[in-house]
Length: 347
Image 1 (tube, rainbow, N blue to C red):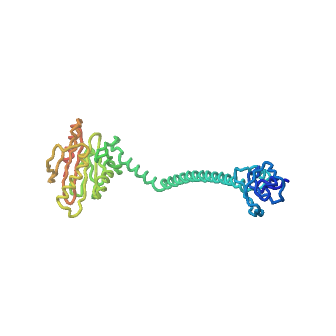
Image 2: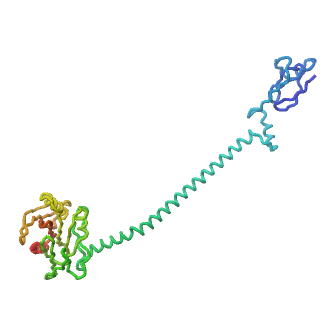
Image 3: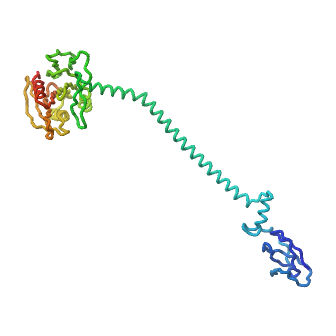
């Protein structure tokens, strides 16, 4: 007689043979072991079941049935449960994780876009703020400096002013706009000298030396800054220029108590950039000249590779705590005559 049993794993209804009474059999569907209750023996009939040796008598197992492993034969039941809207943990959990991962990627992309847009906006705001700050505080200074530079290179008498190369790196414009009064200029002692014949202009220096320029003379602020103020020296530089010719007078105040050897070194350091000795010019002649009771060291400088004949002649002396430098630059015979008259006018 068949013994009716139910598989605890797949819930299949089975009929176990009498010979399996009190033993365990394998479920034909899920291959799980199923306990067969003990019944009186009958004629043996296996019915196609495999009998497993177990104790002859055993109470029904109280152990809760184990859940089928993922991928086992219980998958159809799990799928059916999912179709019946049964909230099964194994099915819903992976789906929930996948959805959460998608949400995280989307948030990360959105955050990245926000950071990029924020960085661009920040750069634009900083640029606007920098422009406003510059136009408010620095633009007026640059405009004033450009105006001074433009005034520094205006012509004397309608002719563009010749630039004398003073320091390495290129020519430096000498002079500023003329004061009212045409060719007249103000001397270091605050007086206005008398205008000489044919536009000649005398310049009285604090050292007691007066030199007459061939034409209207003006103070050169650019050369004063570069030659004196950058060395923390005080003094004045005046110059005149026309076409290929130029004349210059520099008066430098000596610090009190400076030793004689240091005064000599200072003279040489001032003559060197004025004579362009650092830009290819060389001293071709040196001697001493006496003019109106003043003894000058004289330097004649030329560039050896220059066939134009351009010459820079420098006279320098020290008197009454001042270094006085007279310089003439010329290229032709007419310029040499202008330079000779310039040095001869020293009083």
